[in-house]
Amino acid sequence: MYTGTTIFSQLMQQLPWHQFYSLVRRYRGDHKVKSFRCADHYRVMAFAQLTYRESLRDIEACLRAMRPKLFHMGIHSTVSRNNLSNANEKRDWRIYAEFAQVLIDHARRLYADEDFGVDLDATVYALDSTTIDLCLSLFPWAYFRRAKGAVKLHALLDLRGPIPTFIRVTHGLVHDINILDEIIPEPGAYYVMDRAYIDYSRLYILHQSLAYFVTRAKRNSCFRRLYSRPVDKTCGLRCDQTVVLTGIRTSKAYPEKFRRICYYDEELKKRLVFMTNNFLLPAYTITQIFKCRWQIEIFFKWIKQHLRIKSFYGTSPNAVKTQIWTAISVYVLVAIVRKQLKISLDLYTILQILSLTLFEKVPLDQLLMDFDYKLMEPENGNQLLIHGL
Image (cartoon, rainbow, N blue to C red):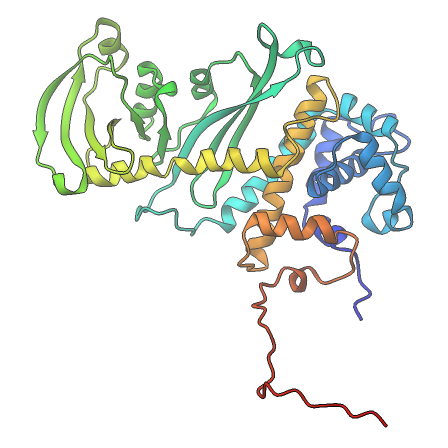
């Protein structure tokens, strides 16, 4: 019989706590705090994400029911709604944001050799954002529409994994284009974006940084074709052109040549036009790179469905950002555990198993092992009769 630590404790042991405590000291997270320190706060918030708790009252009730086991889970303080609410309001959200970035850096190294669907020896990033709706009466600082509040979650996703490498939580009114100013271009990397990110001056900065962009072209783009390359129309390609912009402002913002590729998608019955500054890859490979952008949309959909980031335990900006960053760190932690233990289960299944077994004392690798259950049938179908005395 296994008499070790609980599943929750084994998960928490995977975290680099020395780096967490370093961040706590940097931002004075435990300054004048006598109980319920940042480490306890993080553990409780991680527990709430893993078990999908609905409210502060829900968290308090569940943990108090398991009070004898809290010490062995690493929670050394009394968990109450008041303690948790105050921590969400006052503990600097940057502690949890930078700690999530530490986990992201570790996860990227583990997933560096993953295949994302295109045979390409380069790093490919997908950039996009999602809007998280908020109740304007509860979050008046997050004004977005006349009767609606919102924040935006911007993410740059490494398609090998997929692991978010850059995340920003902003006001809902912040335009997607502005996020390009915060990204440090990586030479040789590919940045896949939709039309919302087209700003020719910013794209030119990517080009000058020796990075590649792949995006859909705007319908009203004014350009002049310089020459065309032959294409294989049987795979959906319609044209592969080298063009320059002819608009008064756009030609000054992006004075170099770029590549325009037209592709017809048989499944969508739709004509798609792409633009890129890469002239070396085959045209069909460019279209496949853009197709992989759907992974970031799946990432946003996944975390909204399976993590607690659509309803919040606090109403201040600090509480909202703390909860979002805790959710991201839990997502990355589960991805790290999955890779380190070589588990074949998907993240959704792992989360479902963990949500029901956090207080169990079972080895983590044994719990997440992918068994192939089969019905045990007797070789002889005839049942023996049992005669009474």
